[in-house]
Length: 109
Image 1 (cartoon, rainbow, N blue to C red):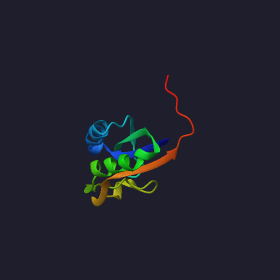
Image 2: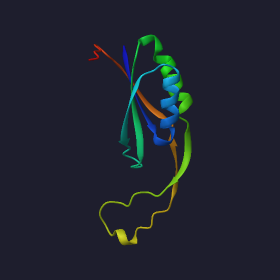
Image 3: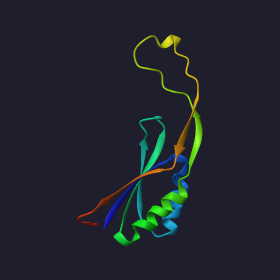
Image 4: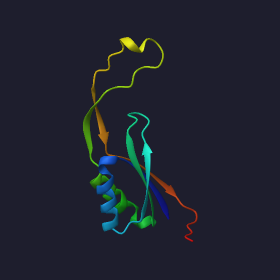
């Protein structure tokens, strides 16, 4: 048994949730916040048998596409913030960060 933890951008959340249900994967969604862009994302926890891990990973990969987005950088800590003028920068967002962990025991009450 494996636990798959997938951190995805909010824009991909509904598509991934629907795809997981269509392929008979049970999941738990958690609202989370990313540290780099300080924007919302969703963390999925998916428990599955070892033989279905690759299928789950392919569903995640198909549902979560990376894209470029313009963001305003966060002002630097310290110093005079009045003279700081943030210029938008283009960064790649989206996709998924996935962890696959072994599960020793699974119980459902």
